[in-house]
Length: 339
Image (cartoon, rainbow, N blue to C red):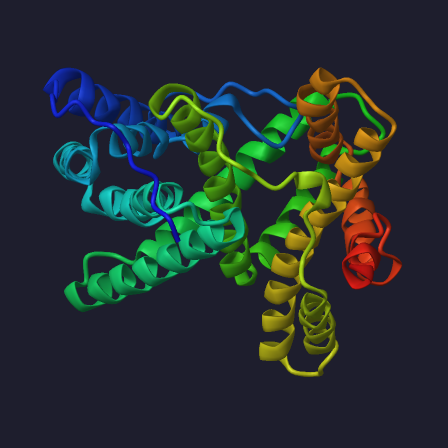
């Protein structure tokens, strides 16, 4: 596959090209546990938690603009500061969650990989890096990063509960019922944590890929690359067997199979959610909604509905994406077969 050549001037300004992106990346990453949270967007997310997802973006931009050596040097600077100022586990977590992702996205954009291949490589890289770091940590007995991440997830759920209570104060649901529901969900979330890690990796990878590609086209190569419209994107039909297998494992009378099934079901359902969103995008393109509404307002509205209306809307969109395998709502498969 043809590689995208970037015209570099060869000049490197240490302050602008290394220190500045490293500082921005550090601030985005550390802000979630060093700055008080500011609740926004309903009851589930906070402003700082959203910003932290873009921690690798300054490194990616430097990597794409100034090359791999400067990108690696910027990443190494971030890791060094984290080790010195905080703890080594924070540096390891940054490396697994964001450092590996930054390198893979940068190279994928340069190599013109598809978004599907890029996200797959990002998730696989994060999982492989996490497994290696977990093994090293256990051998050196420096603390278990997996346990630390689980505790961070529990703390995040507790913050979500506090935000939910503050938003829904005076509602029909009592605070005691909310706390009981969150405690039950926390128990499920612990053994479904691998699935949540993968889903989180997909979200972070996708957000950073889209943002990095925009900056790459707008400010670095200054031209648009060919891309396939999201409205016609769909999963290969054989993916439905993964959904069926996950459901089968959930209903087996074995604890290990139930846990595996729930993890697989969360992951595959999340992927089909995107297929449902692609169908939604196709529909409002077909009725000739304005470009501004297509690109900004309606997608934001869908996300807000998913975040604030609970899982019900997400389940509906996921169901639409799943049944598209047979219904072919956009007639994409029919067109392919007739060509």
